Image (cartoon, rainbow, N blue to C red; front, side, top):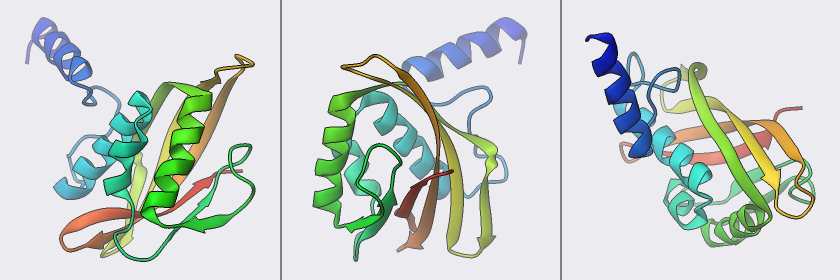
Length: 153
C-alpha cells in the first residue's frame, strides 16, 4: 500500500475508533480475541462503562484491583463492575488506551493476558496518570471475556 493510502487508511480507522499503526492487529492473534481487545480499547477511550459490560465474564465475578481507583482487590458481578467503571470514567478523562500486539499473550488454549497502557487525566485535579492494566481473559462459548483487571505495580 502506498504511503498516502496507508495514512488515509490509518486516519479512517482512527475516526472509526479502530486501532491502526502500532496498536493491536489481528496478525497472529485469534480474531475473536483481537475483536474483544478492540472493543475494550474503544470503551476505555470513550469512557463508556456500558460498552465495557459485555466484555466481562458472563458467569461468576471479575477480580479487580486498580491502584488509586478502587479500595483494594475486590470481585464484582458485571452490573456492579459497570457501576464501578461509570464512577471511574466520571472522575477521569481517558487520553489514550491501547493494547500493543507484543503485550498480548496466550500461554494456554482459552486463556489470554493483555497489557494495556492507560493515560488518563483526573477531571477535578487535572493530574495526568499513566497506568498499565493487565487483563486476564478466558474463552467462553467461542468469545473472550474479562476475568481479571489489575494495575501492574
